[in-house]
Length: 75
Image 1 (tube, rainbow, N blue to C red):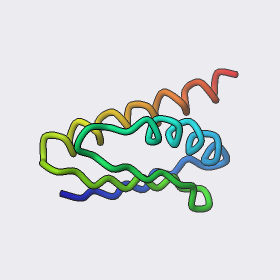
Image 2 (cartoon, rainbow, N blue to C red; image 1 turned 135 degrees about the vertical axis):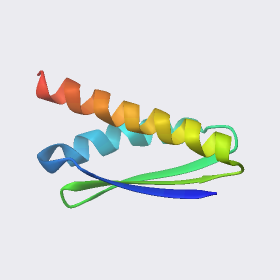
Image 3 (cartoon, rainbow, N blue to C red; image 1 turned 90 degrees about the horizontal axis):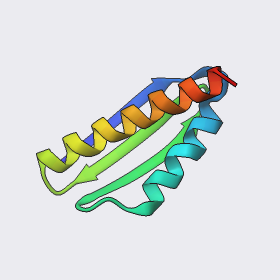
Image 4 (cartoon, rainbow, N blue to C red; image 1 turned 180 degrees about the horizontal axis):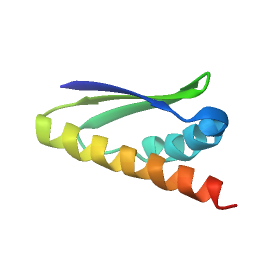
């Protein structure tokens, strides 16, 4: 199972990518994640063994991206 997400993150893209890359390095069971900046968009690519793992990882990374953006805006 695969999913690719592209988020418009503007000037915050590199900072959010760094925060999420640290989470991706930890390693999730049954899921491989690649996070990288692409201009003003954040790209998240996930490959999972099953749909449940894909959904859980996608939900986590979207939540972390939202949280990181909120932290940056409140600095």
